[in-house]
Amino acid sequence: AQDGICALQALGIGLVCTVFPYLGYTQGLKIVEAGKASVLAFAEPMVATVCGLLLFGEMLRVHHMLGILLIFLAIVFLNIPLGFLHKKTVLPGK
Image 1: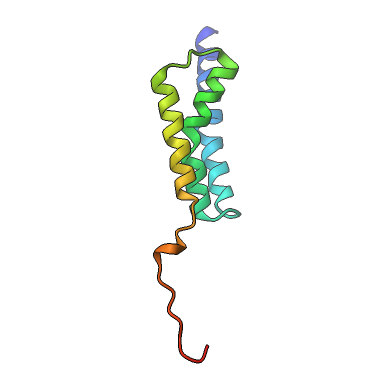
Image 2: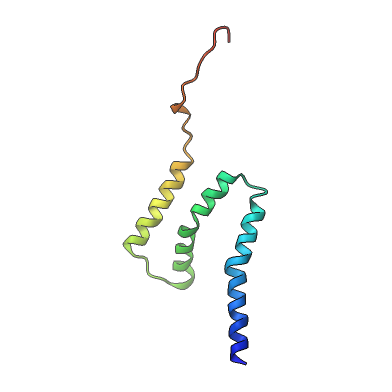
């Protein structure tokens, strides 16, 4: 009886933690641009750490804070418009 319960629990964890998120991400790609979806996926470790802190009372250490800060800064940097890098050509008569 215990083996059956453990097998069901393992199946539930597999579905909830692996299959459903993958299917949701795949469905989300139909709605959201791939670039925005990749930024959201990039933020997943940061969100997982914060959830661990809030839901499970995990300890926040310096390397966790540094990792969260680096991910956050990378997301901010990826969203900065870099139009100033491209020279705009003005055509005569325009």
